[in-house]
Length: 240
Image 1 (tube, helix red, strand yellow):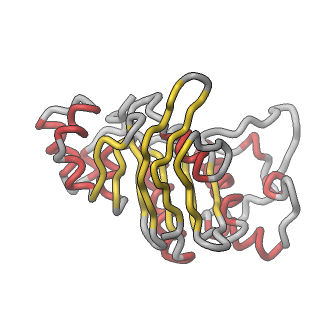
Image 2: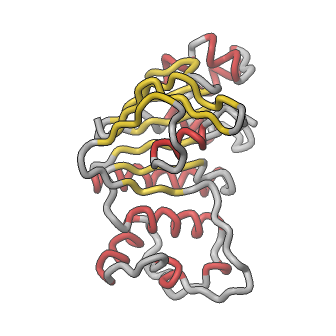
Image 3: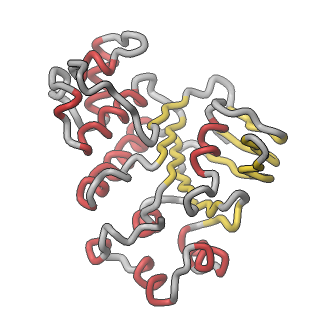
């Protein structure tokens, strides 16, 4: 296992946000975490990277594990001129070779002198991905990295993640609201609502009563998520 949790519980203030989380990820595997707003998805990622401490339980890393993290959002001062190359060099400057390789891996070669604030949403997400790839991570964590993108931009971003996994052989844990994408582009799904409601292969989870109840899906919607032609979905079919 690259990373594993055993009985993980996280408390924020008086609220137990996560309870008894048992999960793991192997190299080359993509695990997707889904759940309604407030279900603890982002908190789980933050616990995995050590940004929040467990109230109880454990987070276990393989020895020397390198983690790349793509956050849900990054706030940048819009009045501050900053080319992509400078942004990529914060907080510490990578070698030119590492920077070029990371930008190529994220599919944004040639954007290094462009101003960050002039980038499209999709380009900026790829810049964040490139930053996460600088250290050639063993594990890539993505927290709703496509939430600001349209359907086409989202599909392109997920294809890039597949390419990164192939090239680096890394494991990927991603939080997503896009159920149809999850069912097509992941090896294992974890359905979260403060605790793990159900988990397993996408086709097993999508057929489970817990999953359908949590997302209030009827049989017709479930059939749509099983359909192989993802172009038939509306990009608005997302869980709130």
